[in-house]
Structures are given as structure tokens and as C-alpha cells.
Length: 432
Image (tube, rainbow, N blue to C red; front, side, top):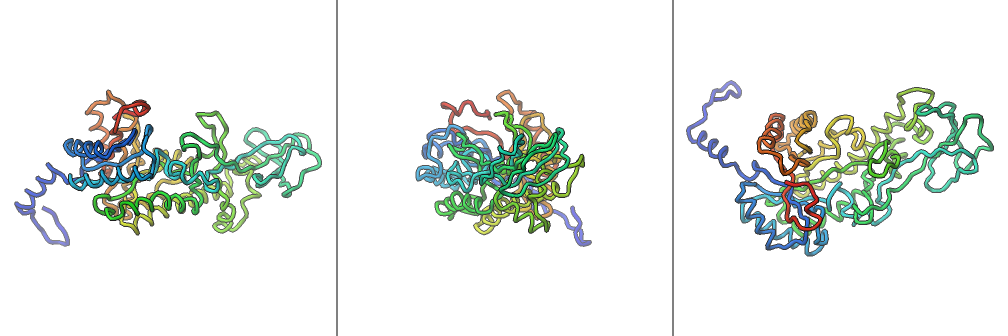
């Protein structure tokens, strides 16, 4: 029984039977829907066969996920023939066919189809120390330069050098700090190009045109029906400072050409005279208003350019925007690559999280997802879960991870990972 508006009502016998039936045999939306790794040469007939197998296994649908080993050209005519076959078979089986917006991850580059244009490539602001004035070269990448006395992470006597000029000499202990914008190096992971400049609204608009609009043209008649939504995987604005663990190269700070103008519009003053404060503690001060405003501005640009634009496109086209951002496991990790996950969740019709390994307990992330869902009236909350475990991960472990996530409000599971094939490079990927 339950009480509402002072009136006592009892469940009827028929209602109880319906509830029991739905609990024992839940509909597709309440069943697991795995990441289906498209990781080889795809065949529509084989894809259909695997959809039927997933139905027999009790799954409610699948996410069509381009993955390591894919040997069918991404977003090609053959690609969309495979998508169409799976959507058709899902409809026949009463299942849901979810789209995925990238060739591997993170989302944004469209497998390099977007970032083959240099305008849309990710950028970083780097700090370079120069020992001699004659070494200062004002090329297009240099946005500002300063003379400072530096002692580790502390800078004193900061003086800005006018654009295009060089100091005649340096005082004892002085050096020049030049702040240089660098474009990401080309990478095989992005098929010979780079990650997307997710702080640039025009770059994200191009990503939507190449990816989302292609899906709308080819499969739009299924939107909101057999195709309920689209998954965005680990979008981010790039790491802030630190060292690249793969190359050992020092990292800079996220940057885009429109950042100085956006900063002035939001806070009413110029960012460039304060660039030293973003990297060092000027005069020993561990905190800086300009540093805080910079991080807030970068978070705003990322959320507004990527989260809002993709979310609005999905809403207008009858899709649910789902997935998760990069490194949302803790608040400090979020600060490093996305700023604030909750500000991003606002624009997702179906907010989600990632849970990697059998050891990690991202309780705070689950509560953030559920809290945002409650605030914005989102019924479902997704987890990409069981990832980075192994063949020996037991059923008891699966249940334990699922139980605490369910207790914290997560109610749609995307098990990681269901392979299309084990051939060639695909077998090196994370197992089911």
C-alpha cells in the first residue's frame, strides 16, 4: 500500500501480478546492454546472428562500438549497411540498438575525419624558459612573454615583455618565460590526426556535422524507437599540467583561440598578463584569482561547446545523449581533464559513468550521476561497467559491483565488453 495526498490506495491483485511478471521478465530497457566491440571485418549476416545470440542471452540491446581491430571503413557506405542490419534485427527481436559517436575513444575526432582539418585540432598552452633574450622569437604560437626570477614553482619580479620586443639584457637570476600554443602531435590512435579541440564550439559543430548528422541521414527514421540514443565516450579537454605517462613529455594547459575573449567576457579583465600565475606561484602565493577564473572558464567552454551542443542536437532529434566523461572517478581527477562532471551531466538526457576494474569504488561518481538525474528529471542513469577486469573475474564479483551501483541509483548497465571477433589485433583488447 502507499499513501498519496492523504488517500490510502491498495495495489490490486492484477497490479501485483503485473509487477511480479515485469520483475521476473523485465522489458528491454531494464536489461543489460553491452558495449558490442566492432573489432574486425564486419558482415551484416554475422552481425544479425550475434544480435539473435544476445537476445537468447537475455540482453535488452547493445551499443555498436567501433573498437581496436575494426576493418570496415568507419562511417562508410559499408559501415551504415551494418548499422542498418543491426537496427533492423534489433527491431525484430524487441531489442534496442544504441549508437556510439566515435571510432574508438575519446569522442570528438570522428576517427580523424574532423581533425584532418588543422583548425579543429586540440591545443595546449606551454611554458618555455629561455635563458637569453636573443632566443626569444615572436612567432604566431607565442601569446605572451615575461621576465621573472624563478625558484622551482615560485616566480618573483614578474614583468611582461611587450609583444614583438626583447629585453636588452637580463638581471642576475632572471630568465624569460614564453607562453606558446602548441597543436597536438599527429597520432596513429586518431588514424594519423589528433584529438578534437573540445573548447572550440565550431570544432564541436563540425564533429556533429560529420558524425551525428550522418547517422540522422542514414538511420533517422529509427530515432526514439529502436535507436533510443547515442553514447559519447570520454570526451575531455586534455590534461592540465603534469607529465605524459606514455612519452614523458611535460604537459601544458588546455587552450583554444577563443579563450582570451571568452575569459574577458566572463570576468571583465585580460587573461594574458596573468599567464605566469597559471603555472607558478607568483611571489609565493599558492592561490590566484586569475588561476581560478582560468579553470572555471575552461570548464565552461568544454561543457558549453561539447556537452550543451551535443545534448541540444540529441533533444531536437529525438535521441538520448548518454555516455560518460574522462576520469570522472574522483573530484580531483575531474578537475584535471573535464573540470566538473556534474556541469556536463546537465546536458545529458541519460547521464552516465564508467567503472573500471573490480577494485575501484567510485561511490562519489555514482551519487553525482544520480543527483544530476534527479535534479533534471532523468529516469535512467547508465554505467559502463565491469571493464578492465579479466577472464577470471567471477560472477560474485559482477554482482557485487552491480549491487552497490544499483543502491546508489544506477539503473542501466552497459557491460564492458562483448567482442564481435577474437581475430588478429582484437584479441589484445580487454576481455569480457
